Length: 203
Image (cartoon, rainbow, N blue to C red; front, side, top):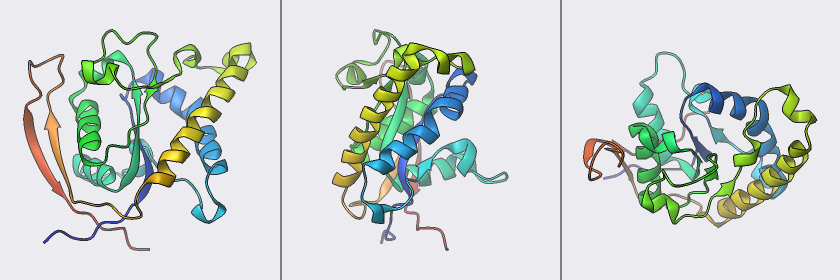
């Protein structure tokens, strides 16, 4: 019998662990995103909980199991879609598993074009952040930074609407499978399967 599950995270942030994405998330995106999502949720919701692997997984933990558990207990997935996102078997698997089990995916489009995206991703509307992917303090002094603030506010509002529409509890157990990205295989073959029925951590 499957164990009862509860949500631990509001948002699972899925991204390729490369410096340009990490710097942008840390310096320009994460805190502003959390603040703006919170502004669109009722006060009783409390702080928005965003899973970021570098912050949430403790040293010595089983990395892949922790990621699978976080996916299983997240309300929605926010993937940072660049062409190389879909070349990562782990990123690709995060997306594929979540869209099959939960279906609530709100993507960020990082790349200026989508021609290297899989056909399935090309059909999905993503918020275009491709004009705002600069890093460094100089970005804050540009006119684009004002436009960026408006873009992230609009995106956060969309994510908040999704969160408010999620059922109070997960409706099914979550089984995580590894998928081969389309760039490295003709079909999406399942490689490894983890069964995940996690509980909320003790207070």
